[in-house]
Image 1 (tube, helix red, strand yellow):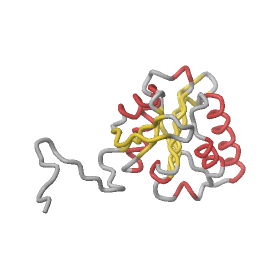
Image 2 (image 1 turned 180 degrees about the horizontal axis):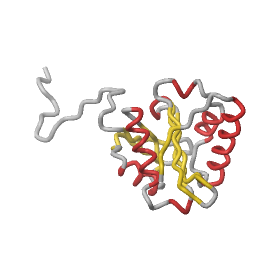
Image 3 (image 1 turned 90 degrees about the vertical axis):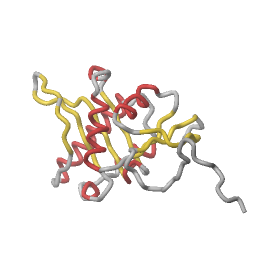
Image 4 (image 1 turned 30 degrees about the vertical axis):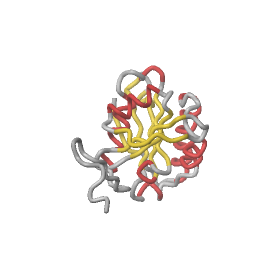
Length: 172
C-alpha cells in the first residue's frame, strides 16, 4: 500500500480526479461522513491544497490494471473545518485508515477530528493514529461525539490538574 498526496495543476485532471474521490466517498463512506466535509472537498481547488492545514491523501494498492484506490483522507483547518477518512471494504482492518490518518498527522504536524461514539471503527483508527479524546459533545446529528486531538496540538490551551495537585489554590 502506498500513501500519497493529491495535487494537480491541470483543471481537467483535477476535476476528474476529484469527481472520482467524491464517488469513492459516496460508495464507501458508510454514510458517516458529514455533508459539510463532503461539500468542502467538492469545492476544493488545487490552490487550497497549498494552504496550511489542508491536505488530501490517498491510499493505493497495486492491482491487475495498475494502482487502485484503497482509501481517501481529506483535512481542512487542521481538522477543525473537515476531517474525513474512507476505506474500501477490502482494505479495512488492515490499518489503511490508520496509515492515512497518521500520514495526515505527519504532514500537518497537528490534527483534530470529531467522531460519533457509536463509530467504533473510526475511534479505533484515531486512537491507533495517536489522537486522544479531549471532549465529549453533541454532533451534527445529535449523537454523542468525541473531539479527538493530536497530543502536540496547542490550538486552545487547557490546563488540567495533575494527580495529587490541589484543585483550589489560595481561594481568598
